[in-house]
Image 1: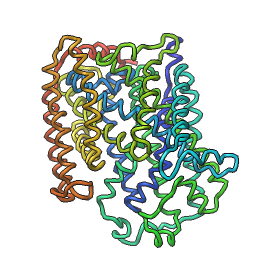
Image 2: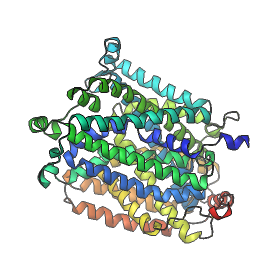
Image 3: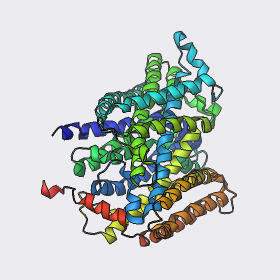
Image 4: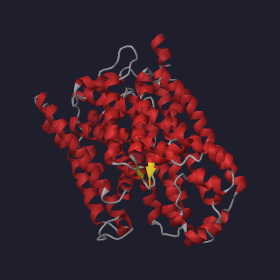
Length: 535
């Protein structure tokens, strides 16, 4: 009974998910998307929401079938063995540990523009567009604080994030209302298609990844990765994901529209959408509109929103790394669970250290956003393949949530994730693949220690993914100039190449699934799942 009381209820779960979803994305995303695509940026958020929504549909079924901590790192290996599982887990883990420093940088960047005299010392955090030595120190301090707030139990985490999430939802809503009341220029959307899409249609898709929109929706996996710590996971996993994604999506779309319609038309006429340069987008806009007290509140929220998201992702990243240890491809001490608090403390410490290293290598919000989006999408590609492989090869498994539209949504989500990866532009795709390759020595070392159990079979079952990564990199390199390619394939024919290729890889992936040791272990876990009709 005491163990069940410690588990996370639906309200806490939604607050935890929203605390992760509404972070620096809303503070920077609307400005960046409008700068890239003009008023058509509103479509970028809708497209981004559809991409992540279709992907999440696959993981709802998988998450309710196998409710376990760090679940996102395990589904691919259940259906395709250790190598694909490692690739997916490594890519996802990289994106998660990158989320910790990106939120730290966001908080520090907003702090560096605090207008108060007593806070003048914060202006030394940034010089131009880069972090200074004191700025790096401030980012490191934030990472340490995020980690310590997770260090002493799930209970402390949920109490903190439930409170902070209410604040984080309230401020964006206040911005939407007050900005609309103060300055509302619907004509900014344009009087024709040319004004609505001043830079053409390609930037609409580019903004989806480049402006951090995919990144802003990424946090739905917080629910999946805490599967074994959730009360009634057979119901609350699906409810938590759907409720939090819908709320966050509506807020993001409304914020983008508010940003577009709040700017003075004469300012746009003078500078153009490309010329809108803000250091602290919504706070700067509030000052332009004369709402000074709201700008103060926004500076506070610009500190709190990334703070809440960073705290949430310390929890998610540590569970993901611990899950990789249980897959037998990481040192065991890293995944050791603290018996008193039930959390992987060593994983948290290692993630904090690596987060600091990432800040040094990628010392800006935009650079980290691109890495996060692409590596996340690569990891997500395995979800649709795994979900449908289980549908065709393991029909008798218990499914608390059976997605009626999964046979259609699975290939659709694979195609959309592939397109979004392509939208990240060259050379981001290649950079992410290189990061994934860096993890392979760990995999083969531990396979060697284990005596190469089914290594050949796992390799053949993962060959589709390895070939896919080469395919998407080549297409990105020779694709249209709109996406930084050589323009050997012109826009929008490059989209058609990605779509056709993706369908082929999706079919190939489904056909290579097999039932190995990890499937048998997952089958035992699945037997403990409670179906709705049994309650």
